[in-house]
Length: 398
Image 1: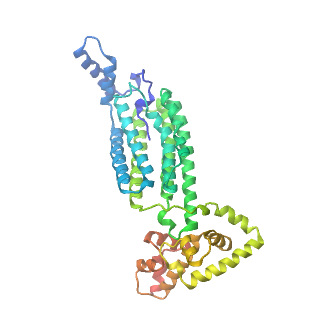
Image 2 (image 1 turned 120 degrees about the horizontal axis):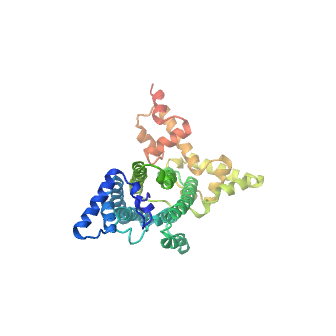
Image 3 (image 1 turned 90 degrees about the vertical axis):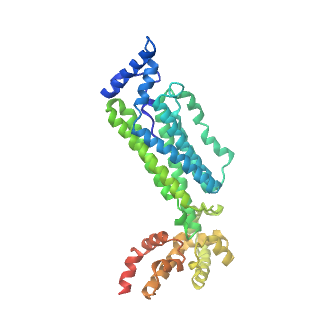
């Protein structure tokens, strides 16, 4: 989240030299207004009137973030299952931070106590815990300790630059942890599901990465603002606020479209490490080669790969083999994940239908081949064949 310009000024400091001509004129008008009621100028009230007059377009964006965060948070909280409540909490946190920024920008609360810098410490662990709840479906008590380091900084908000600097590094560290966790989750889904792309959270990785880049840029802006024009400073703050408004909207839309987030199997998280170890054992390699030959024969002869949303557990139930043995045999012998292995057969099936000039639409062919969505079909087909389904179909229609 960006921080208000007033956040970065000492609570007892007011520098006229930083104001443009219009702001200075407003300042003296505020003083004159105070003279109407008292022969002695109330300097603090003049400052507050000036701050109220200096609210800008950034605050309009922040107001949009308040409404978007609250409405989006309520929507996910009331219409989704419990694992989405962490995302709702994140949206509420964004709305609260924007609300506090506006209050401090207007001068209504800043003279009481400055708290907005603390949010930069808070967003990192809140984002991490929200993603953790999505994937694991629950949070252990010990995981709530991620929020504890934020508490001491509530008492140190007068050291604004220090908190923002430390908070940015803190936030980037949690962003990295969250990204690594989401990428690991995608790898696990690839080992377990043929439709893993439908539940991929890689888009969230990009949201976190992009907002992190803008956080770094905004940190630079905050540290050089005494040396740049006031207008440019406000513009930079506005850009960062707009990025966050867009990111918040994307999060709401994408999660609202998701019906569920599959929970991964416990035994699939270490597949890559185990497979590499198995590959070094000749006897074990031969054992998995035998398993794979039987497995591959069953899958192809029965065309199980045509089953929509086929999972590792489904194959285990059909064959009687352990999920771990199925996954490892595919990894070791083919060097592919379960997702890649199944989708290769599906693409071959689609290509055979197209070559036979079957009078069916691409959507019907994709559904028949077991693909659960057009988007995943197009993506997988191009990854494997190197061309889009439409490009592949055109020469075969001649």
